[in-house]
Amino acid sequence: MIKYIKKSLTSHGFTVGLLLFIAVGAFAQKPLNPPPPKVPNSRINLLSADSLLGINQNPVITRQFLGNVSFSHRGAILYCQSATQNESTNTLEAYGKIRIVQGDTLTITGDTLYYDGNTRFARVLGKKVVLTDKKVTLTTRIVEYDIQKNRAYYPVRGVIVQDSSTLKSEKGFYNTRSKIFNYKENVEIINPKYTITSDSLQYNARTKMAVFKAPTLIKSKDGDIIANAGSTYNTQTQLSNFKGRSKIVNDDYTLIGDTLNFNQKTESGIAKGNVELVSKKDKVILNGNIGMRDGKTGLTKILGNALMRHTAERDTLYLSADTLYAYESIDTLQNKIAKKDTVKRENRMEKLIAFGHVKVYRSDMQSRCDSLLYDLKDSVIHFFTKPILWSTQNQSEADTIHVYMKNKKVDRMYMINQGFVIAKDTSQNFNQIKGRNISVLFNKDTRIDQVMVEGNGESIYYALDDKNKLIGVNRVECSKMNVKFKENQVNKISFLGKPDSKLVPPKELTNDSNQLEGFNWREKEKPTKAEVLGLKFAMIPIKK
Image (cartoon, rainbow, N blue to C red; front, side, top):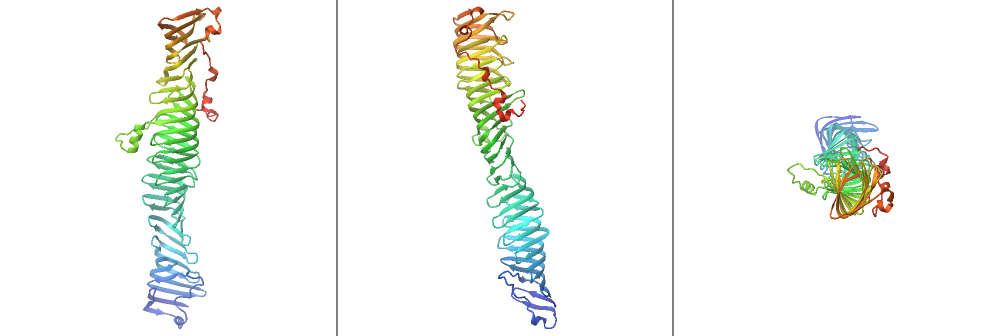
């Protein structure tokens, strides 16, 4: 039975229009609205339409509506220009100026709608489908919205705008109740302060927390972050918790760790597991088990198997210790935080302090000590607590030693309290000098050039003839003395004050006559590069 009715329909009734064609007795026998379905409150209710075309083909009952059509269902209002309602299946097909309104916050617009009243599932299609939920706007071509579960899904590329952020992805889910997004494939979040790219991530619009489901890159004016799946990042506070091998890169440094907890605003945080910090401008690399950085004070602390590498044009200084402290330029850092810079400045690592089982290796210098201070700005290394240094067949010991470098080479050394210098010559003889305080000058080959003793001076040097044949051992005691060397052999010696000198012929030499008290040639203790680097690093070729 077919009915065609041209009417003005409202939710309260209707007024007869110009034409009314019905089969005989049809209107009297069949109501306009069929009986409600058995399930309470599940029926799609018509609110308004300009006209109706009803087609009844038992057991299928359908109604077609034209012009300014609207329906209500379980708290949602559906608007369109035309619609076909299937009373039997409780479904709806709608076309033209689609608009779904749920509550006072969510709206979906598009060109075509397929809606199932039983499952409360809507599928909206169009050239431009827009979902708006308060401050969140999604634009795409298809939106599938499960009203019952408050979950929207877009299976094609979509663009989401929230506040000042724009997000793009190939597909994604949005929970309108929890405000949680799940983005899939070619994900990109663009914000004036940062850009995030990933293949899969979850984002909570309320907490501003992003959870990475795949390797992710975050770029900002403060630097880049490379994170792995399972990591979290708060886009508002810039606090991060990175899992897996993650990396932070900016103009000043690179920080890498198996896990990273970091505040990008203050450049502060903690890294754990195979930590590496690279100070780019200073050419310094720090490694360890744990790394802690305080951007406000400019302090970086490296704990456990701590290692430093300071590269130069021709050589690299390797240093290992239990703990390392690295200090940046405080003035530059404070000006950067206060944003008072009018001239571009550079953060530089100025000082490095090492504690516990300190070992140093460079091709021209090796050392062991309990602690040291490395002043990178002034190129000075201060060795503390009974340090011992080796340099090209020379050995130096004292309570404290200060080494000054020039043009990336050891230039001079000051030994404080109980200084002892041993120089091994080409004939395997040990020339020895000791005193309260000793100053040592080195030549361009890092060999001893001159030794100056202040207080309680003692020396033993081997006197050789022109053919390097031993004449005897000269033992001298004098408060102050000045010894000049050539090829690690004593070339000239002068004394201030009256010296006590004795030449011992070769036949009369004994250990007492050719060794000063405290003599101990400890070359076997000299650390190698492999030892300083540790087994983990020693297996990896490292360029100087």
